[in-house]
Image (cartoon, rainbow, N blue to C red; front, side, top):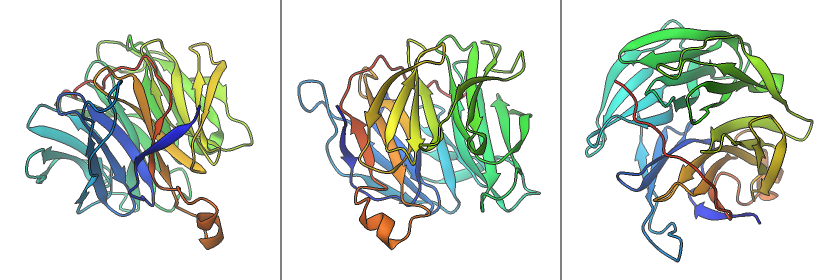
Length: 296
């Protein structure tokens, strides 16, 4: 049990994978190089499988997350705010500015709640200090949920929309908080769900149809799975030291891809991690679920 290469395009900071079941395409980002990547998922092999080329789009700003609005439009989370992207032409239109007073911040981990609300994480570009935050966007409205964040990660939601997960990675404390299933707003205070160890950092996560949280372990070369009560139930090795974020893919959301990164590595570390920065397909089947459309 392990992982195989889904895309051999090397990202400096691969992040934010999201699968669109209507188009059958996976989208993800190389944040620091301002790239949006996409790859189709045709019905190859007995269970379906990846094939074809990875398409790389240049972005004018750093982007980190993407959500589907409808067949014609997507919503990108970027360092300057939320941009509507024309799915056909790639044209970006600013929809909602964020943190204009903090030009040294950028967006990071973000995910759509089952209601269509979007939780959006921001952080300092130099990763120094807690100037980041987690915001809630829903039907044109933005609210600040949590401040004093260094590196927001692991934003994901239980399938019934009643629990949200997130972490400020430097704290190594993955939190869970009760939320309103109708709009994704917190209804209680965050509590610790999982305490990370010394063998890496809790990075991006996604929650499957059974409430299992799948987490990419940055510096740990693996994806860990935690049961709804916080117990580690599975670990799947990834052939890249800095695995960064998972997503469900395929026509029935039964597979997991995970991005990775080479950011911060010197020449020797990169040579020792030849697949670092590539995107991988885990060699297991899961009970995943598709990302909701964002409520614009």
